[in-house]
Image (cartoon, rainbow, N blue to C red; front, side, top):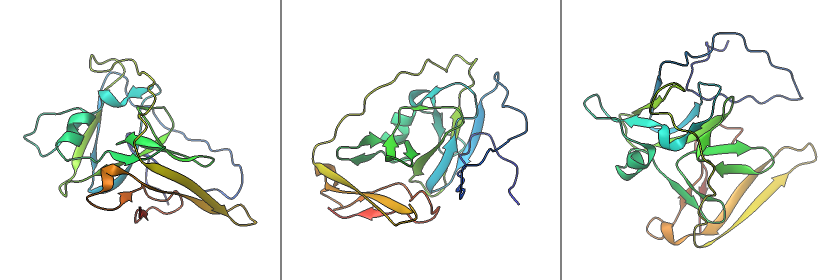
Length: 197
């Protein structure tokens, strides 16, 4: 009953056992940018091309009369949040790995999904530059800056291997609010977890 997959959005599957998945369709045109609307709150996004896209190459637009800006500028303007988690990193884009939990990323790989949190109720528009456009630059790998403070990652699982991972800690960046919000749990698409310092 799944609607057709939309380029630029991320999708997650939870399968009870290893399963071969065949996806049929057309790839996004390499000579045109792909634009998607993001809603207020956490959004799942995905690279619509088969080449890596650097986070710095993404373009964000808020309201129709606004000029597109970079991810860093969207964070500065308060459209998108950059979360800081001690000993994990700081990022506005998050990937998920079943073995290590959430990780900050600086580029979007093909065939992978990511989380991003929008802070404006009207939502924003995200544009992925096409591989052939001048706006697209080669992605560079950067190590995330380690935030000050401390954190402990705790993973709990039952005999069947089902479980969850949470990061508990304290960060000077969150003194004002007293909490740091994590991306939504992998198995649940609704409310995000809160971690108290």
